[in-house]
Figure 1 (cartoon, rainbow, N blue to C red):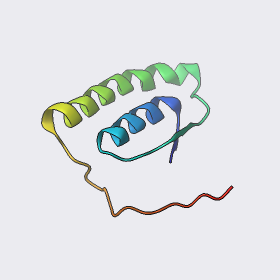
Figure 2: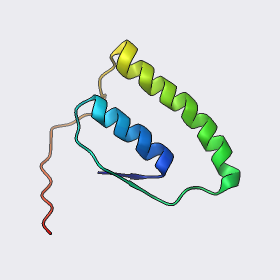
Figure 3: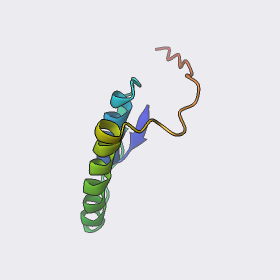
Length: 74
């Protein structure tokens, strides 16, 4: 389960899918527009690096621990 702003959830879900982790994202409220330009600019670079790490370099997760089972009852 990934909980963050939309721009980060999108990248985190992309990475989790690439390494075989089944995940779902819940997006928090977006940042104010004045701050969003800086954050979105930085996100362009972060997404490019994620793509390179996954598809070109083949980098594996650094802090991937043992799998934990999460049971959610309704």
